[in-house]
Amino acid sequence: MKVAAAQLGPIHRADSKASAVKRMTAMLREAADSGCRFVVFPELALTTFFPRWWMTDQAEIDRFFEAQMPSPETLPLFELAREKKVGFYLGYAELIEEEGKTRRFNTSILVGPDGRIVGKYRKVHLPGHSDHLPKAPFQHLEKRYFDVGNLGFNVWRMFDEDIVMGQCICNDRRWPETFRVMGLQGVEMVALGYNTPTDNIYFEEPPYRRVFHHLLSVQANAYQNGTWIVATAKAGKEDGFGMYGASVIVAPTGEIAAQAMSEDDELIMFDADLSMGESIRQNVFNFAKHRRPEHYKLITERVGAEPPPPTRK
Image (cartoon, rainbow, N blue to C red; front, side, top):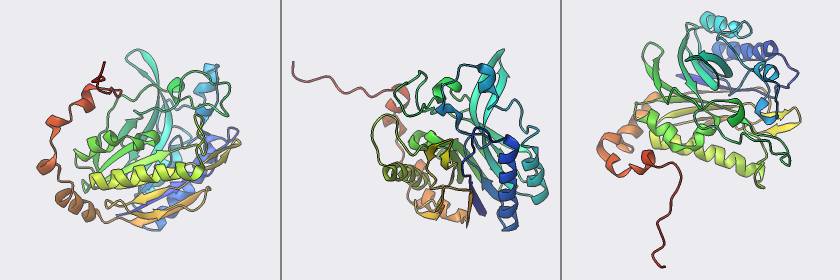
């Protein structure tokens, strides 16, 4: 199945959601006309990465969120998907009334080639902090603006039941549990959108190492679960703050099949052989044959690391 990662360049705070959607529809059309059946857009693809700012006006914050999907601004994407018979993944900020409470999530959806939403995911591993860090070059306030996702790591059958698809968002890629849960459901392809700053606000880290850790996470998890991963960035100098690109399509062998070379709008495509993943899952990572979950209990019983007590008093 031919797939595409539709990397976006910067979306500035002053840019409208409609202008972002116009760019995405152009890329969706190009991908479909090139034979792609599925296109992955970035995390929070409709706006600037707003968690970099400390804001206290809730009305100002909520302007970055969507109360419905499709929204009036995003409807052209859904209509084009239906016209071209191409599916897509889209990341956005979701505002919803749930169980009598107003909830806000960092959300992504899978949309089928009929233009209908097939599956929804809400980001579980929220990075950053919730308090204001006045000495930091910018903020990373996902823990302030979003609730922890409550839908888990599910998979869905798409394209006439032919492929098992999963999805996750940005920091989720660094946690192997993300992919193992989907791997245990037979996932064959994972869509992943991200917005990752070039600079680390906590300690000095060269940009090349930031990209290396991104690629390491995606490649290792693809291999260890025998799945394709399509990882797509929003990149470039956004409102004066750098974000790296390095959008990739990674094979179940862990090898990079295609990679973006810019930090602008860029479409990368690859014809993914789904049988490659089946071979890895049967002959290398055969979970049914080799996993020993009775020895993994700490993974679900303990959150933080606890070293053993000292043996000497």
